[in-house]
Amino acid sequence: MLRHIKTALFVGIILNLINQGYLLWGFQWSDIKLTKFVLTFFVPFAVSVYSAAQARIHSDKNQE
Image 1 (cartoon, one colour):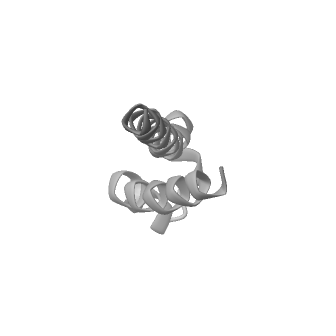
Image 2 (cartoon, rainbow, N blue to C red):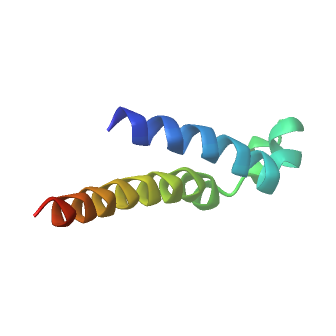
C-alpha cells in the first residue's frame, strides 16, 4: 500500500503543478479547485492499485 501512496504523491504533485501550478505558485489558495486537487492524487493511486491487482491475477493464472 505504501508503494501506491508514494506513486500517487509523486504523480499527483506533478499533475497538480501542471494543472493548477499558477495558483499554487501564486499562493492563491482560495482559487484552487479542491475537487480537482484531490482527484489528481486519487486517480494515480487507483490506477496503481488496479494495475498491481491485475498483475497479480495475471501472474496467478500463469502459474496454474
